[in-house]
Length: 82
Image (spheres, rainbow, N blue to C red):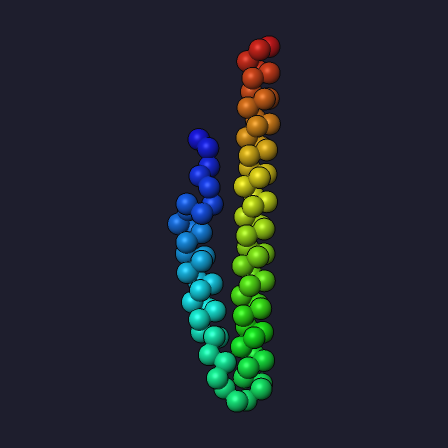
């Protein structure tokens, strides 16, 4: 079974919804207090960095799974040939 592309998974869409929701909570920069604005900008940066980290880790896991599957199939074909 071939894994489906990441953008077709429910996990991806829940992740996107969480990022959009978290970012939407920090968008209103109409405050005049600089500390509030700075904390909101930091929150957006944290959400973006978390999202990038998650995406990279999922990509790594999927690529390793594909490599392991190819290895197992090659090993199994050698065992059958013996």
